[in-house]
Image 1 (cartoon, each protein chain N blue to C red):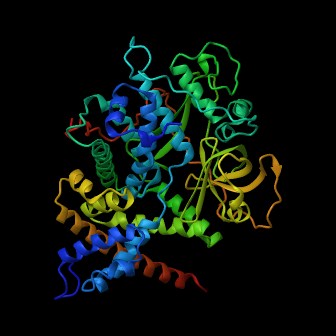
Image 2: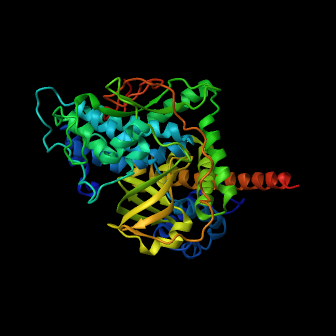
Image 3: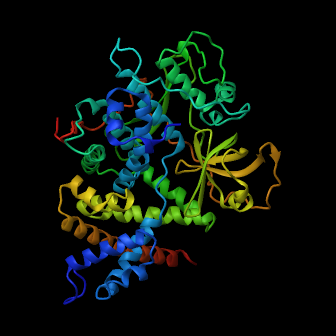
Length: 320
Length: 201
């Protein structure tokens, strides 16, 4: 593994490689980094180029729907672990982010709800849903069935909803996806919210709370959900976008779980002229969503049937 | 909105032990994406990586009361849990000799996306997938060092402490990992171009 026979030793190469890597991470070009190590430059150049490619790639995004459901489950699990009678946690109970400054028709919640939930979703929004879960958990429920998008909504306790990811313990060949996303409700009669189908087009409206460009990928966060901008959209509207602008746009969920913005309809309520663009190039036809397996009522904690449970995580890395 | 930057490890651990929901949010913000990437580069399986992310964070919350900051850095403890879950996953997968249908569907989708347009996003996704596939072929010790250093961006010293290895050993593993990765990527490139040639009429 030490390169050419009679060439530099692997230890020397490893040492020089690490030194060059530091420089490359700081923004130096591969060639510039190698100037300090002429005796190993030839061997290291292709390897450093590979390293640079890897470093420059954006991280894999955690799908927005999955991300929200994991957080909701963690908060529920945490709340369930508070000893009874110990009152509220030391800090104030979680508060939902402030509601958008305008009604949110067709809000992000519309993505996660089936038809019976459209009205609820349009009024409440996904942020409101999280607030609902937390309000119920921390005793915020009052028994009213009126649904609003205020940070402390009042609900009938029967409407607790929890997103739950589950996995089969022993995936086998031919049994389809090994993991499914399911949604459960503590109330038997409550319809189960679902993620939008892959490829389904939905309209979203909300303020931009975050915007970033990583290696030519423009990502905005609207209604607590990440959306990647289609290159056509970036080209047409990129310079105009900034935090605080209220966007109304059409989006689709693609196979890797990301939401892609395919058209912007309005910016701050003003209709925008549509660019002469082709169909969204990154969207593929919609296969059925990967779900529909387990339907357990695991509302408290995102535990799954893992193969075994050896790691006890006790701070010493010992097995149980 | 909670700013994860304001929370150091000791505050985070204390908050989690006190069952403070803000601490749970900070934990999620600080670790979810990193754990997902860590798992994905090892397993090349999206849904499994999502599960490992979820399960790791769940275990952190469940077992935080038994954790002592002075025994092992919090970050290292979290990734150790993730690592052990991955080991379980690989053990189970080997037992089942699983062919990941999820993965095949993901690749199908990516192929479509790439074919539809040669845009940056599609090509980046495809390249990232190629790298991920190549990383999955690395020997376990090289893969672990590679992911911790290149995907997670841990400092060399942190990786040494996490893996209980010397600086020299980690530098060597890091070098070999990228060297092998380069070879695997070249192989993939050759295979792909041969495939394209065959497909052309």
